[in-house]
Amino acid sequence: MAIILKPENLARFVFFIRSEKVMLDSDLARLYGVEARALNQAVARNRKRFPADFMFQLTPGEYESLRSQIVTSKKGRGERRYRPYAFTEQGVAMLSSGLRSSRAVEVNIAHFRAAPSSDGFQSGPRSQN
Image: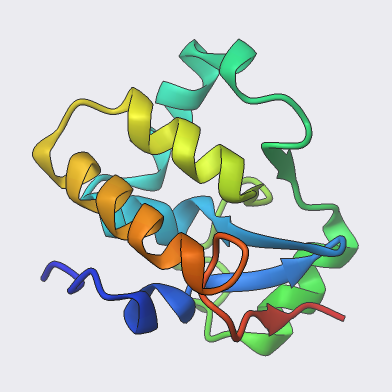
């Protein structure tokens, strides 16, 4: 089921990590209607478009802290094999502009419509302390 692309719906996918508002690869994949694996493969093919200030991989500590705050699958069933990637506002824009699906265009438009409301990402990011 597709997520309705309203700023208030996008806000629930925003986290505050390393003093940055970010969105996780798995959440972005859900928004784009693709598997996280496919999204990360597209990023890997275009790595030069994603410098460290656009995207970073969570440390083991950041990942554990985040897992304690959100509902995750039980160990051994559907668990991630790698730590998630976090995309800053610029990374989300780069990702959206690089994907060619109609859904990616919709997500890109929704992202930019939300931008004026709070320095790019809708207010209310969840903190990862």
